[in-house]
Length: 187
Image (cartoon, rainbow, N blue to C red; front, side):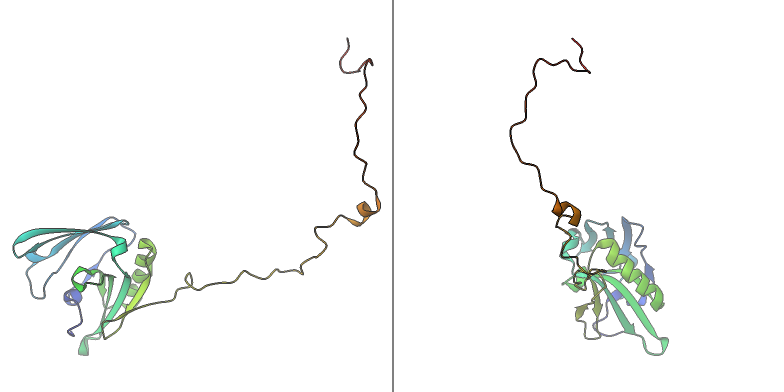
């Protein structure tokens, strides 16, 4: 475990991205007891974190806009391999929240994409130096309008050829017929 790795790296955790709202506990300090874990409520609008600070209860309510995105962090653990952590990344590392901690890289990739889609947030990758960089997804790549499949017909707004030969009628006053017996309205 490096100095830049979060305190939850040693634990196993998985929050289902399809089961929002979610309630879970997050460790606040390395080596702390489970009594000092923070209670987290997460839904598609924001996060509520309840924890104790110096023995006093503290409740933080943050909108999802306060977070930078859904980040994945891969931490080497020596001979044990690597551990992947999918987390809701905040500028303040104390407010970042784990969503998945596992050694299964395929599960981490699937949950990373599912959380980014569920929360409508950008996908980030945290390097070994602790800096997060955005990942370009297929949705984020700018696309031009597709070219037409057929040649553009430059004559499509003109009149058809047989109508071009005909003369249009002259506009004038219509005759008014009075005193005639109509077939449909007998008197």
